Length: 121
Image (cartoon, rainbow, N blue to C red; front, top):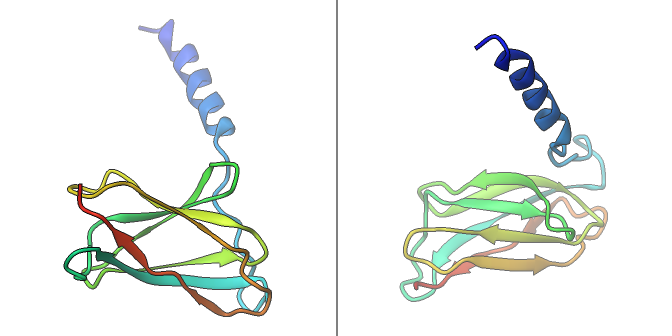
């Protein structure tokens, strides 16, 4: 058992260094800071879909942020302006995976609404 402890320690340290930091959001009051928000709905009923996760990815395909969806189907997160990105909802029970690319948000935009629609399987 003792022989495994140093190996386990090195493995855990290496894994933590390999992870990319979370999304770096500009400070409050910056023209590059945008509140991204929207509603997640069912494509057939139009009703909110809740208890799922909206994931923010950069264009290289790395997940940088996650927002949970509340009981009204709403999500929100702060993101930087000037960077194209993709939002994903994956493995949501009963729905097809969603991937939607978003345009760069212009500087000075305080809020940007992006509603998402899930399609049943």
